Image 1 (tube, rainbow, N blue to C red):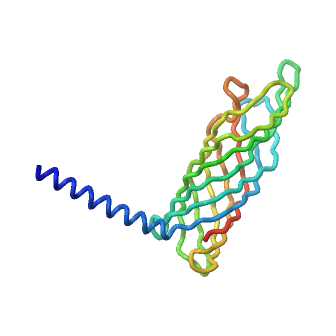
Image 2: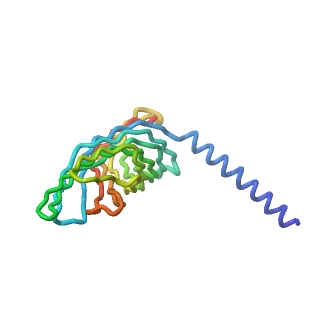
Image 3: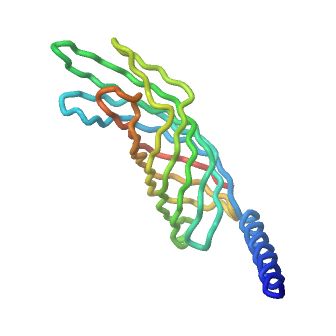
Length: 204
């Protein structure tokens, strides 16, 4: 009984300490808005297919929580426009399909940040992003559709410029590497929607 009482006391003490620490981290959290003009392109598993790129954009809200001086967790949500074109030659028939798909993206990133140099901090950000389809526009001579969800691995390299306190502006280059098939089940070829672009944001 004494052991149970001790464990219960230890659990309460640990929970209270964790809650205080988490509350303190939330007080020091930063929020922000960003927009990311991008270039969308498609990668397929069919060497006979030709692909075309098209412009895209990502914009959203970010929440950043500091783990320590040099590491942060970032999450939030975004609206992302992905897509591109595929031209296939099947039995002397040319099939051209153009995809314009809108997703809501839910990222979980780790941000590795340098010491401040002048007014600048340099950083790398990496992590997965879950993309849930909101709307699609597919132009094709045969019926085509896209999967309801995608997973990306996202990589950013960039810098922040401090405006004082927790407020800063940031700019980064990014690559969203889609790792799950973008097209509907049982469709040929399998394809991945990739993005490369520039992210511009304001954090406070």
